[in-house]
Image: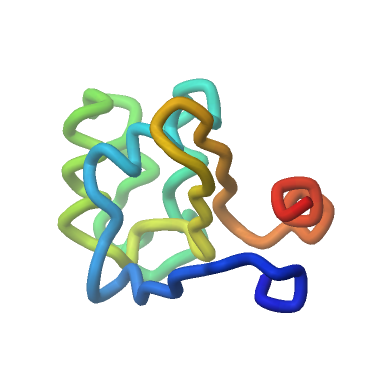
Length: 102
């Protein structure tokens, strides 16, 4: 990111999870697909049986889970822009990130 001149703020999201508002912004980017925000290959996801629980959770309950446990959030987590023009991505897909960092 820095090679492309991006002024990035790196945050360890396990220690400092994204806020509910940031998660809601990312959720909007993924058209409400809450599963996209979860680290589905993570130990915590399996131990807490999120796969089985997720369909019964409200969006607010799922966001609360993510806010309270950074290990459940898919990483890396990238939000760009202000409130009116937010772009972002979770997980590292080089082509997706290249488009965002133009």
